[in-house]
Structures are given as structure tokens and as C-alpha cells.
Amino acid sequence: TAQQLAGVRGNDVSFFKVWKSSMAEALASKHGKGSLQAACRACARIAEWSKQDLARLTPAIVRAFLRCQSTRGDTVAGSLRASFKFMEDHLQVEFHTRNALVEPFAAKHSNHIAEQKGFFSFKMWNHLASLARSQCSVGYAAKTVLRFTQSSLRFEHTKRAVLDMVYEINKGKDGKPFRCAVPIFFEDGWAMRDQLQDFMRREFGTEIADVIMIPMCRLSDEGKSAVFLPAKASFARFTMLMRGLLQLPPLFLSDEEAALVTTYFARRLNPTLA
Image (tube, rainbow, N blue to C red; front, side, top):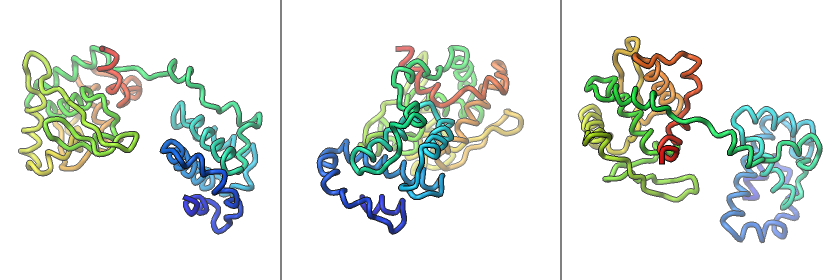
């Protein structure tokens, strides 16, 4: 870990003199190790962004960095500041987290709850279900989106899923594997998942289909057909597919409305209904 942090400042490792004594207690727990790893990544990001050694950071530089990173999500800047404070507390590396310019970026958990994103409306759900009833390629594209919607997974976890009656995710948010049960039947006894899995096995073969939960797919011919590829979907490509399906008739979401729809809408649907 010391070498990982040292890389942030090239060959200058003078600020590691107090590393053993100050970090011994923190590293005694898994939580401490995770916090240190997050701090390593935060240090690397600000060093790359600012082109400065950590010892030369000023409050103005840290503030500018956090403002820039805040555009990536509501909690990003707060998490980065927390990592910087961890470095201050345990390694005595100054990140000016208590400075008036930087302190306002402290994580505000109560605000995070109030700013949660929306979820799929019943109109969106019924639209996708209607498309999925079709046995054409667009219908299977809609089935793919509904499979993700029903799972309530983070999209990143779909890339680590292997089918075995239920999906086994080989690495979760905490680094541990877990199992995710995706409903076999959709409505009225309609075995949507089986239909989608049979389609993927016909398209890609069993060996590939059973290790891809969400395949790469794109709409073509102005939304009249869909093209599937034997690879795991990227986040950007899946989001484009989901928004594209919601813009098809009869729903016809506008570009502005579709742009607001994210994979987080899908993650929130089932818990919200429950």
C-alpha cells in the first residue's frame, strides 16, 4: 500500500515516515483497508488532475478539483473529501479539508436521500411490457431491459453474472459474491426469462448465453429492428437501448424526457413498488 501511495508523488516518499505507527490501528480492520484504498485512488485522481505533488496542493486547488468532480454525481465530491480527510487524520498529508473553501463539500447524507432519482412510471413499464410481448428482435430487446429492471441490480453487477437457476454475481459492491434471483414469470404465467434465454442460446450458443445477463444490443432501421452481439453490454450502450425503446410508439418519449431516464430508474422500481 505504501508503494501504491508513493506512486502518487513519484519517488518522494518522505511523508511515509509516520506511516507504520499512524496506520497500524486503521489497517487492523477491513473497513480501514477499504478506506485506505479509496484514499489511494482519490490521491491519484487529484494528482493527475492538478499535475501537482500532494505536498503542493492549496485550498484553491482542492476546491477546484472537488467542484469539477461534483458534476459526476451528487455524492462524488463528498466522498473524495472524506478520503482526503482520512489521509489527513492517518498520514498527516495536508488536503485542507477544514479550510473554508473545502469544508462545504463535506458529505451531507440527509440531502442524498432527498435527491434520489425517480423510477420507471407505470406508463414506461407497460410500454416495455407491450413491446416485449412481440417475438421480433425489438421484443427481445425489450425483454432484455425488463430482465435488468426486474433484477434491481447495479448495472456493473450484470457484467459479473453467471446463470445457474439464479444469477450468481462473482463480485458485489463489498467485493463478496452473492446470488440474485430474477423472476422466471413476468405476468399471467408468461415465462419471459425462459423465452429470452432460449433466444440468446439460439443467437450465441449455450456457452456464451449463460454467462451474459445483458447482451450488447442496439436498435436499427429507425427502431423497427434490433441487432444483438455476443458480448456483455456496456453501460452507455445499454442506456442508449433503454432510452431508445421508450421513444418508440406508442409511448413516444421526447429526447428531453428520455435523457432523464437512467439505469437507476430500473434499480428503484421494484423496491419502490414493495
